[in-house]
Amino acid sequence: MLSAGGLVRSRVLRLRGPAAGLVRWAGPATVSVPEPRVRSVSGVGGASGAGGWYGSLSDSAPVHLCEHFLVGVQQVSGLPWWLSIAMATVSVRTLITLPLATYQLLILSKVEALQAEISELAKRLRYEVSVRARERGWTEKQSRVQFQKNLRRLVSQLYIRDNCHPFKASLVVWVQLPLWVSLSLALRNLSLDQSALRGELAAGGALWFPDLTVPDSTWILPVCLGLTNLVIVEVFSLQRVGASGFQRLVLNGIRGFSVLMIPIAATVPSSMALYWFCSSLVGFGQNLLLRSPTLHRILRLPTRRSDSPYRDLLSAFIAKYYK
Image 1 (spheres, rainbow, N blue to C red):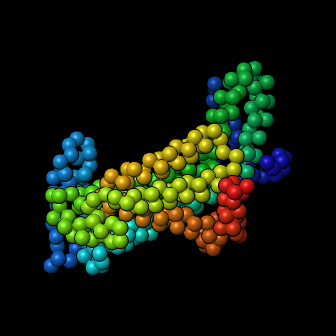
Image 2: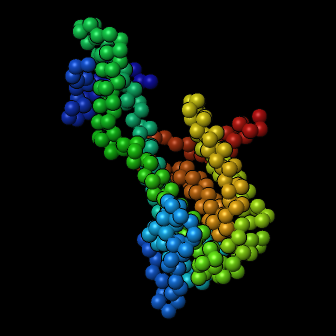
Image 3: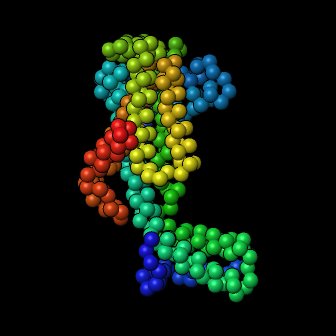
């Protein structure tokens, strides 16, 4: 933590507007399909036989939009269905998820860079609250309320000043999760008996999963999915030094969900399991890409990053699991 004094005063004076006074004492895209080769995929969700909210979700507009997107990719590329699913996954993760993840990295870096300034403001604010508490005879609880209220106001003004409210960092989740669900249900609909394309998916597999409409009986895809998700979680956990009890609880919950996805993936059509595995694999690659020092220099991130992130990651992994 930086010391108070002239440096603290100079940083505080840079706040504009109401933040100049530390304390306010208030009182206590779709893909077009070539016309000659259009194949109907409408009505698949409605014929799924599922009722209630699940049936409505399977028959929703976003899911049908994803169906047409998948069919369009396969028709335009002319690739087998298994390779077309992989290609569609890479396209979505690259064109939609990667830019949002990059934006998330930029926001989080700005928030991290503000921590030193927030610490200085908190130190100065705590002193001023204690002085005013003695003058007005506040109790400890009243002093704590005044401190927390004014600190939240100052931190909010800092976020506005640097345009980096942490909520913006969650944008990638609000886009990626509905997209993942919609594409998963679209592949499920295309694999149903009522689908006009079921025959093509049944013959569109490869290697140990020749039929994309039935579950992978070898469990190779489900296990690969679970292992990839676990690696992603462990890489993320290596960034958390001195994690709190709640953070460790969340990480263990995600680990448990990653293991639970293995039997779930073994009960769904292979097309869905293939999409989930490809999505996790591309996501892992993008996480590694976002650690690149070159990318950080291009984005001009305000925080210092290691010049050898991959070596540091490998060293941290070895230190945690092999020593």
